[in-house]
Length: 215
Image 1 (cartoon, helix red, strand yellow):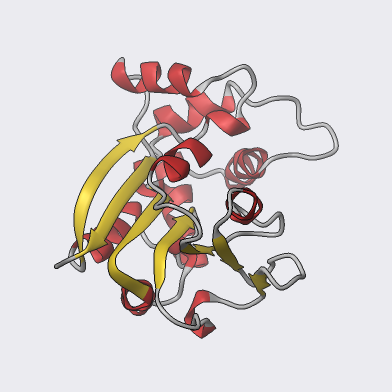
Image 2: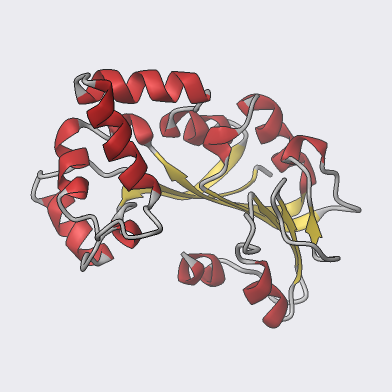
């Protein structure tokens, strides 16, 4: 996803907040290397001055920021409206939000099976998709029932709800649905997944939103 983010960046040294940067730091290392004043926010963020080990609900930047990036993190938050307000409130005039999200509600049985058929050997480090395949088979339930129950237990927000929460607060520059699973699959490129979507074999589960502060 770095090319998408990089293509929307203002000039350095703009201030950027990466929400849900994860234990590897998300985009922060690349942003810092490119001259940006970047901060990562995550309860599992790396140690260091470039990161805040907290949830987004408890983070307040020192001054306005030019860009907020949230990659596959907003469907996990407790209160989506509160977090959307916080994100918008961080932004300077003309500021931008880039959101990369998962529309899990579109993961129908055909899409799930297409992915499961292309999983690499689990070996010693099974992926999150290996875990879902195993839990689904152990449940003995139809895929749709398993997915709905799992999402409810985990308190996940639908991808479309994430999209709507930001679009009602910001001016949409671009929004589309596309590939999502290919990094977890063996020998599958983004173009392969897009071709399967275009051919009607699977659903488009990836969401990419670029939006700006409304004048």
